[in-house]
Length: 422
Image (spheres, rainbow, N blue to C red):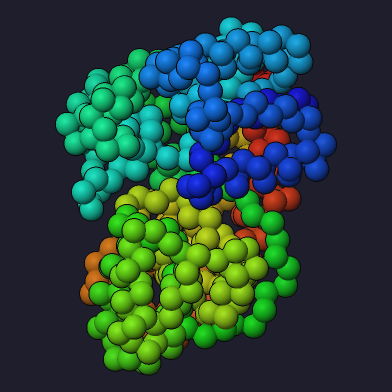
């Protein structure tokens, strides 16, 4: 099988889980015997572009002529079975879908955000969830509120791009939704069930989990939508030391909030931005991972890392978090064939009863994104971590291990290629 993987890499100065996932997926497919033809561009290329190329940048989200020329040549030369698209902005453009179809190559796209509808891709604005552009032919609210890069002009361009390419997106042969919540987003956009497959990302197996550590770990970009302020407000409702330590890792505009909390309370430690060994050490030192975004976070990779290390997760009941910890009720799209993801089993009867408002899953708990609800759930998670540690690792092995996920992805390719041949 021969697959073109198309992705516009985000700037290296802006850490991107999507870049990491694409790189890992290419490596996993190659190891499984798939011939991968990377078709990659990077936003880091922009400063070194010629003046002529830079002059075309404003239209590149709609139509990137050089990318279409290069892709067409690649498709003609190698005749791949499938083109797998990740992020097309700004240097590829969704036009690559049309270029592939012109050559008779079916297209699969992994949906990493909500940018079919939302110019920022987040469904989040001014500190709250925002879906003002849903159902509109043109996302005028995005322009009014400067949702794309804080610029009214760039927001107008992105809103126009989304309007122009609505038929393009609806021509994609198969969408890979990372969670059931993303599948619901695609249905709302008008994509039929038979063209949606739920397949999460994978991360490498870190090996046999270390014994549980102590307390809680919060690891995320320190930006408003990630919910650090929500967590700290909930944490302050407990006396110092009663919950064990809270470790905070990451960097961003809310770093002063983390530093102030660490200075204020002896049970809060700010670790800063961690490298890969530091991430592993922080997870192993803790008993529970906290994921408290206040937006519909698609698929926080740190949750999968925690599950792989046998650490249960306490999170907000938004976006993909209930799916990741097995606290949702999956409604799988029909027609997904061998790539369909199995529903998670319910928690065992030996687990302790939990208060109302806290939803228990196979590998953790979810609550409403409110300080009182999160504060009530913190001691429940601390006391229940040992009971869910084994289930957390089991869920990783069954749903997020590279061997499992790569096989699902290859099955998706095979089904799409066969359908295209028919």
